[in-house]
Image 1: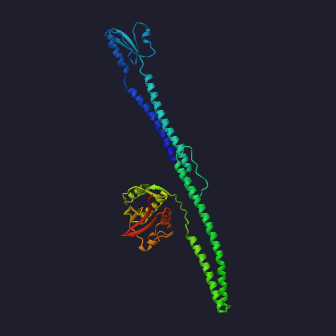
Image 2: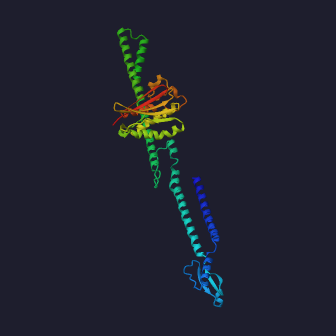
Length: 408
């Protein structure tokens, strides 16, 4: 805003300088324009010399021609004049040097400059009050969101210049709020489950401890009693194993809420979006980027989620490839469209390929690279929810991850 204020002050200074320069040029032009009324006077003198009466109806500057009649009034005139001798007779030529005309011209010039300056100044003020000032008020919202201030929605101003931005920020806020509530609910459910299972484990665990103490003290001398005790220990151990399995299954369940809205969309929509998004940055990195030619068709799934999947694959190709090339290959098989993101420079050992879609798993080639190990896991969950599939393969130093979309 400070820079804009400085620009506004400079604009006012420039406007004042333009007014001054224009008026100075006008005065200089007036002084350099000569004396056009003298031309008219000379023309009238020639008319009189030829014996004709002077006609001033076509004159712009000369207002009167007075013949010397010997009275003193001849030399008195309220307007500018010049006296000329034509033959043996004196004539007084009254004229208007064009002050009114020049004054009108100056007025028109100044009014024009004034209107133009007013339009520019009003435009600057409008931008400041209707665009920059409202944006300055909302510029801190992303920072507030990063600090967890999710309760206050962003209000749109009357001009609605930032309608899409405000809508997007509010959607982000609502999604973050829902995600936070979901995480809190999930955490509460996990804690409740852990406490419940821990309590359930205590009963068979206590029984095992009692049986083991009795056996260690030789309380069971009867062989059949010993066998029955061993069976009880085994049963309680099975119960503990069941609880542990339940706990493990709960921990491995989906912990990320991934909503999918089934619909139909054209293949070109997602390919065009990916190409538009990544082509400029790949060009700056001097990475060859190529997309196969394809015949457009309708495919099933969630368009936004499909773009999210392909962006995850492209980001992985950028992160783990050697930067020589990234190709998007499109093929068709069994009524499905296969979109493959292939990149050069795969450094992942072949033995780790089976684990790349697991949650929180990161390969041995991820050292020194940021990540959570969730990208491909999320891709797989999304593709399965869209009735598709995803698989990965590598050969010859090339990594290929293929998303399978069913055709409509």
